[in-house]
Image 1 (cartoon, rainbow, N blue to C red):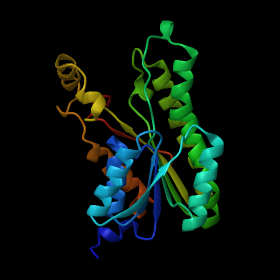
Image 2 (cartoon, rainbow, N blue to C red; image 1 turned 30 degrees about the horizontal axis):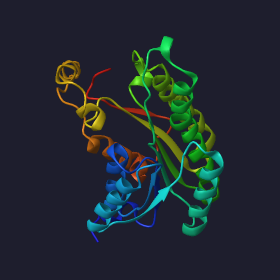
Image 3 (cartoon, rainbow, N blue to C red; image 1 turned 90 degrees about the vertical axis):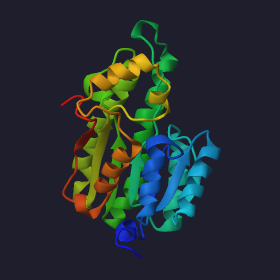
Image 4 (cartoon, one colour; image 1 turned 60 degrees about the horizontal axis):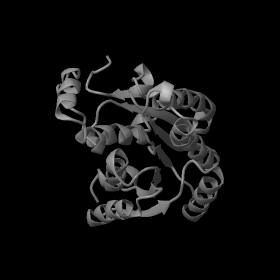
Amino acid sequence: MSEDKKGFADQTALITGGSRGIGKSVAKKLASQGAYVFINYTNNEQAAEQTLEEIEQAGGNGRVVGFDVSDFTETQSIIEALSDEFGGIQILVNNAGIRNDGLLVRMTEKDWDCVMDINLKGVFNCTRAVCGGMIRNGYGRIINITSTAGEVGNPGQSNYSASKAAVMGFTKSTARELSSAGITVNAVSPGFVETDIIRDIPEDMRKKYLEAIPLGRFGRVEDISSVVCFLASGTASYVTGEVVKVNGGIYM
């Protein structure tokens, strides 16, 4: 086995929203370095199974796990069962997130709540579910995916920006709480990344966004997953409570 493969050998990793985009890239990269990955999805089982198939074809291992991160009881129950079966979860990547954009004057309570339930409550639910086992084992890596929208705000995204800003505060607080148990908690804050959302925007808007990025290109999902894997590794054992910006310099 290569040295790269040994990086996360004998470790289990739960990636929420792991069926596509950044979550899929994280799952594939962790698996390529030896982790057994739990690929969480809520609705798109087919995409999650496709991710798992690609991981297995590359020699990795994992399992598809369907549950709604915004449901406290369901999340606790499933994660507890996985932890019991595998002797704990060493790595949690809170990646699941949604957008429901709209101007504040037209935003409904439902528009606000559904984003908060997934983007913020989901992070609490999953972190709450894994931290007990991590404390008992004296080890853990928690990485939360946030966004530059949480740092600077975006028009039409008061719900999304607020949820991501809150995750940054949650990251710092939990890092302080859990550090004595050998658990690090960090966040990764992507800028514009080549996912379905970016690919679907009009060409004139793409050009406008590109002009604002000093590095002159959109991020790749691999740019984000590489940083996530670093934070999950032993190399980052002295890094906690940080929000790592991976945005091409757009908000330096």
